[in-house]
Amino acid sequence: MAVTFPVGFRAGTAACGIKAFTAGAAAIPTGQRDDLCVVHSSLPCDTGGVFTTNKIKSASVVIDQLHLQHNRVQALVINSGNANACTGAQGFKDALQMAKLTADRLDLDPDQVLVSSTGVIGRYLPMDAVKAGIAIACGGMSPDRGTEAARAIMTTDKVAKIATKEIEIGGRRVRIGGMCKGSGMIHPNMATMLAYITTDAAVEPGLMAMFAKPVADLSFNQVTVDGDSSTNDTFLVLANGAAGNDMVRRGTSDARALETAIVEVARELARAIARDGEGASRMIAVRVHGAESDDEARTAARAVASSSLVKTAVHGGDPNWGRIVCALGYSGAELALDKLHLSIGGLVVFERGAGVDVDLAAVRRAFEQPEIEIVATLGMAEGHAEAWGCDLSEEYVRINAEYTT
Image (cartoon, rainbow, N blue to C red):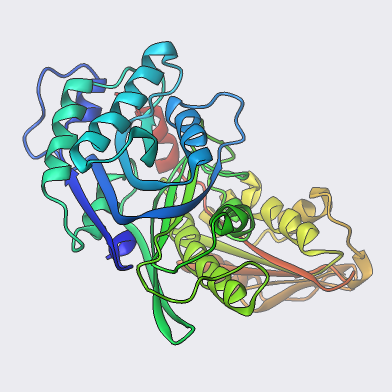
């Protein structure tokens, strides 16, 4: 159900042939999959967002940042296949038109609609196809189409990425749902991902904006696939209040419970991105303990997960743990070499400043598992964090060598 799992949310999708038109096709190919979706809330949402740190931003990112200032969002319109980035004034006109077309269909104001795009950079959106797609999506909306919406936002993703959770707040059941896309151009901070989390919790105005960055830091900002950050990165969290609970206020136990649940959904989505990295055959989970702070632990974990040498060693099943120690050393996080402890798949490979006598064949087998767990203890304090990545393969090169062709 994804983003339509919470009460009051529904979605619709359409197959516009956006990628084909972007590549110069004259018509929508037979069997074209859905590449546009609209998500609608029956009530205005308290909304927060985190966007790309790239100095070059897509038109959709700029428009969303403006619309969020009004904090009365009630719909999302998202397309895949075309990023609408580096498209000048026309790109901004097209993003605004997407918001207006959606608003007109749903009887909203344009600033109540947020816009997202993902795909090829530097090509104009085929607006005739987009206009028709918005009409189809808005005309076929249902609470049962959340998973279809998650498929519609995919680019090189192999699987739809969704997550849900339920908690109780003030005696009321509160639902949280999420979807995201992301497979390549993934690297902190943010990545070429579109991620959306919805909840039917009733919250005080501004709470979702307060949650957005901490949630991203504990989830999406800890994912790395290939070291590239995009022009379109967007993470949005929306709360529409349809659960009917007493309003959740900042600084309360209910706020902490809601934030924790949202983080859990975001982390599940983040792990799904790492697992589905372009060309990936293995996911890498890096857990760091004993750092000076949680921030330093995040820094160290990301350094290991993003190391091309670590990623290629994992892909080749090469038990070269020295690359992991090296990445920890250059990460910028403080560590005590004589207290540094490193394990791979539960096998201790380094402690007390040196490698240990370990069965390298067993380490190789650990590297060949679908999910590899790397645990490092830095020996400094109590900081801890986790990051996720994947192996780097020949298939990744092929996918990106042929991306626009």
